[in-house]
Image (cartoon, rainbow, N blue to C red):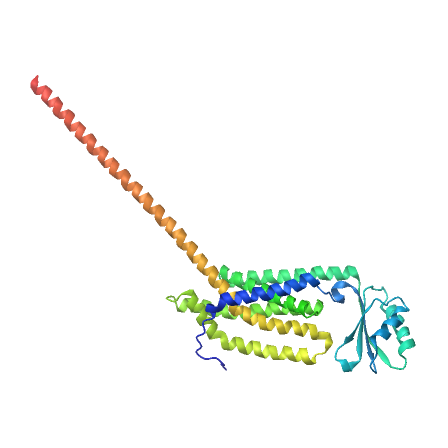
Amino acid sequence: MRFFKDTHIDFMGYWKWAVLGSLLIIAVGMASLIIKGPKYGIDFAGGTIVQVKFRDKVDIARIRKGLEEIKLGDSIIQQYGAPGNNEVLISLSKSSSSLEGISEQIRKVLVENFSDKGFEIRRVEMVGPRAGKDLRQKAMWAVIFSMIGMLIYAWWRFEFYFSVGAILALAHDTLIAMGAISLTNREFSLPVLAALLTIIGYSINDTIVVYDRIRENVRLNRSSSMYEIINESINETLSRTFLTSFTTWLVVISLFLFGGQVINDFAFTLLVGVIVGTYSSIFIASPVGLVMHERQKARAARQAAHVSEGRMVAHGAKATTSKIAAMGKSQKGAKEKGDKETKDKATRGA
């Protein structure tokens, strides 16, 4: 099935505007990340999370007042999920070596203050601060090593200038996704990390499809310029790119809308990633490959000109040397002839 047949869109004609727009979006996202700082989830920050479901609607201020009795009044208390679910998430900045102890203390407070509401403690999670720091470091290295691995793969399969385009597209997608997380005030957690790694895999797959078609068309259309070949290749794969991205996006938006609060951040990150991953394959990876190719071609032309110039200089020097040698030989012959004539005259005079 093909949605787009015989399209002739000049994608490369818009790449400068696309790159400018991407830089603006990345700048806004990174500014938000720097100003507000990353909002780490329990996985990376350390602490304890308690999820409680009430039978009826409950006042958060009343919960905080009850927690103050056990010196947990500085906890972050927020609604969890849809408003009608009556679920509350209690985040404690301090962790405890005993999950059961924390759970039991909170249970006693809730029983004393909300016995009429009916409640259920659904989840208790705890991560120590040292473990959270270790997870942050491992998450950072996971993203870096995945990009290095993709760079090596693209370099091995294609020309080096295309591998540079692929890795810049991956960095572009990751930075925009991180900026979107910061702008929407979401937490950086293990599910979000999994989503970022998924985006990297999805984006490189889409880029490889375009690169494969470019490589094939380079062999078939040797008379065409790289600009024309890249445009043609993107147009030929446009239908496949649209179908893949659209069907993936439908699945992800279903997870986002109906998957529940636990995977909401994961689904949101994927939603952003699918869109920017498709966009970057066309407007980031391909144009960077084109620019790198043109620079390499110009460098090769300059080197060839230098070599040709060197050969011409060497040939000129050789010709000049031969000419000088011939002139010297001629002069020597003339001198020898003159000397002989002088000697003959002297002999006849004698």
